[in-house]
Length: 332
Image 1 (cartoon, rainbow, N blue to C red):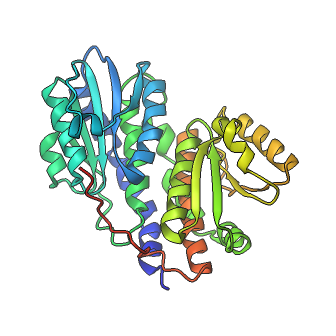
Image 2: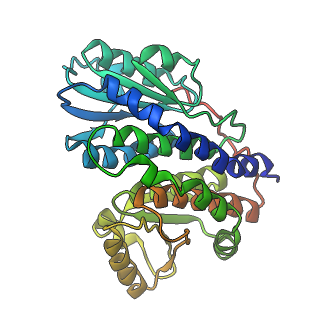
Image 3: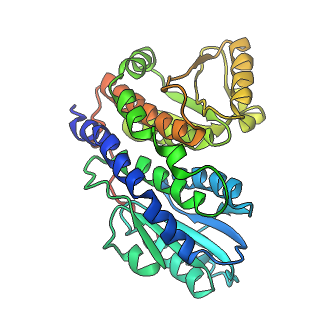
């Protein structure tokens, strides 16, 4: 039971994010140079934690570009061999390792069918780099713990830059300027996550709910908890939870609510009132005040990392090396 690797990689996030913020103007120019004109739409391609980052990017892309955005289904290309016209589309592929076979295969298929493909990876010399038109490295350094931490928040920050380059909107500097300091402050304050882990160390399932941009943080927090602890954790949209799944949230059921600091927070607050009326055990984790919504979501992801690590340690598990998991999952 250590957690030393995950802790060290979490601690490096302010430095990684500061480098990406400083690099943002260069990345913006590079993206604008390759974006199709006119832009038909934006599609994100990813798996695992990168898929949660892609959900964040999907929201931002549609808001910034004013064009439809969505998530790709790799099996359409690796199993069904779909013949799709991608002309005018931008595909954004995310892979920490840059080595997932189905991601590379799908990039090649979309690119050969007319898409412009941007790759976001921690490994600029990986196979992914050879399958895209532009590669943006997250520069997070080697990640040794199985649960991805610094590579995820780095992807999220790069996505803010990439999507901001797609249309008019707040400058990247306005969105990300305070992010490294906010993450640093969050990491220096492990108390809220530790206290919640102490209360919830014996749970066997967990719902994590958010809405809008915060949905991505809910998905990523649930994944981190499931990976590190074996708890059956599920990230959900607060809106979806109102439907059939609410039946499974009984008295005493643990629900973590994610606030993103944006217009969807009113829905999360309404959900909390409903759950409290059902006597569920609701909780939230604080983040520094005054952040733009996208930056608050990234900071909420760091809070989720803290909770996952603390829960694993409280349950006698090693968050660095969860059972039955490896760093790279080679889906095809």
